[in-house]
Image 1: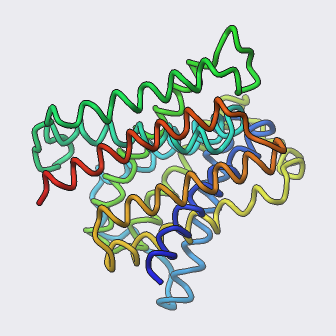
Image 2 (image 1 turned 90 degrees about the horizontal axis):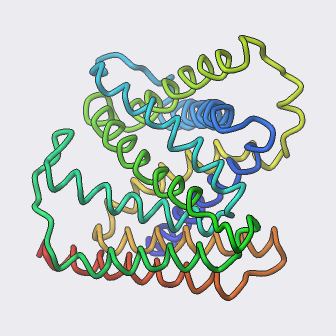
Length: 296
């Protein structure tokens, strides 16, 4: 049962990214971050109200934990941008790759209070395979941006979304340790929502066009439910399964859902795109396998 729960968790994460992508043409990057984070916060309030019959509280949260919300603006906003232009499957793959690389850097230098774990040269093949997958996608001409120009800048932004995701999760995890799981998760999204809202108003001359929210596809509003559901299922999975197995299954769920969503939107997937996604998955699998052996 927990294997299925892990896959479902990954599928919800990919679905959340796709929902954010539906908002982008109307709201832009910062607007996506604002609305998505707000819907996540509302969903967490609802879940906590049912589970614990009380509202979330920020009491006792260390000030530096608020940085997770600010990093979340870029994580969610860039994910919406890249999902809209590249498609969910490529965005998910590159985001996971970005998380992998940034996590390795953080471990190497022991940033943000993480235990210092020196980088092993054995992990280099996995990273090179991931890079190969990125170039295959860029030169496959499958993004709709033109085969000659490629889409390398957007691919880098998708990688950056993964980097910001790692920083968001680290500060969110820190908050959860101090004030509890749901309270910590709520602090992350509500701070991000408020900060994104202020930034959105500033960028639009402090003018809020409410009619824009009625131009968004109703499906996009499911982002909050998907995000809250993924958060809860992740917690269950990591308590019941080994970290390596849970991580691989969650990634498999993300990529599977991403491919299905791309297929549904475009009516098919090109061979070049599938090849690039497959190569990135191979690189991620290689690195996870090596990392798992090093930890034993």
